[in-house]
Length: 70
Image 1 (cartoon, helix red, strand yellow):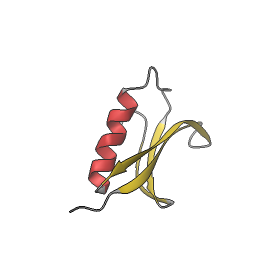
Image 2: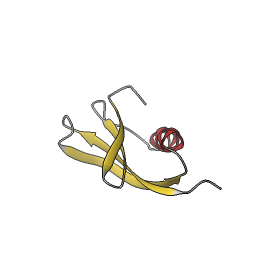
Image 3: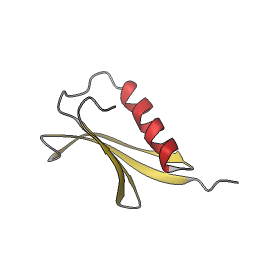
Image 4: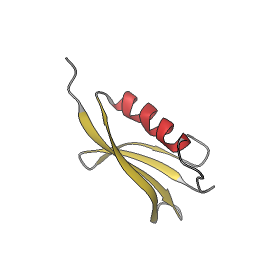
C-alpha cells in the first residue's frame, strides 16, 4: 500500500515574493501531488497572470511551475 504524504501548495505572485493562495493536499507520489495541484488551481475563480505554482513536501520544493505552466 502506498504511503500518503501531505504536500503544501502555494500560488505566488510578484516573482515569488508574495503568497497569493495556498492549500495542503494528500498524495502518494510527487507526480500525483503535481496533478492534484494543477486541478486545484482550476477550481479557483481567478489566478493572477504572474502567479507561480510551488509544490513542497516537508519543506522541500518538488516542483515549481511558472505563469501559464499549470
